[in-house]
Image (cartoon, rainbow, N blue to C red; front, side, top):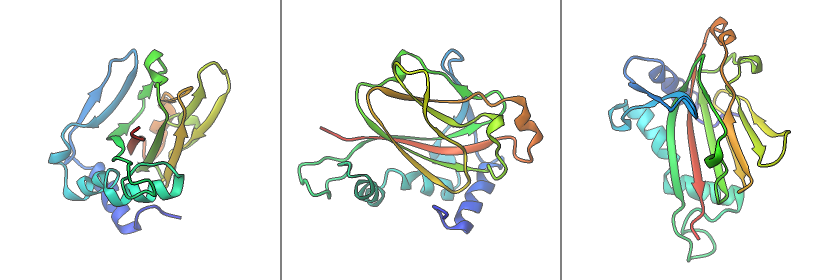
Length: 190
């Protein structure tokens, strides 16, 4: 089942692969290497609207209803405030990654939402998947692979963190050697 209407999704994919989007390298290399949209206000409206969806009041109501989290004032508890939201559009290509570090394990629980674009033939052996791990465990708790037009929702606790597996040179063999995602983090307000 597709998250966005197919026509809209394909239009966003086309724009994200075009020269109309300016990407900026994110670092430092000791923590991360990927690209991010430099200025969301300068991208075509279809991308801006999709990005805005992830922090819109109706979307927060849907997330609240799906998860039971109190992300929006229209929840059953009228004392609830709007959630803290951090949302970005990122580009992943061979050589991209994020690493775990001391600040990866936050002092509060969050809901992660991710939607990938331009990854129709993405293979696990390329890397690029989101790996969730517990603080003092060696085993991976969960892996979320890049899937086209599929919304991934993951609730992580204080003892959990995530990283993006290094994208290796095998991705260059694909017809789509890079992909983009909208990644949003939601935190309930106390």
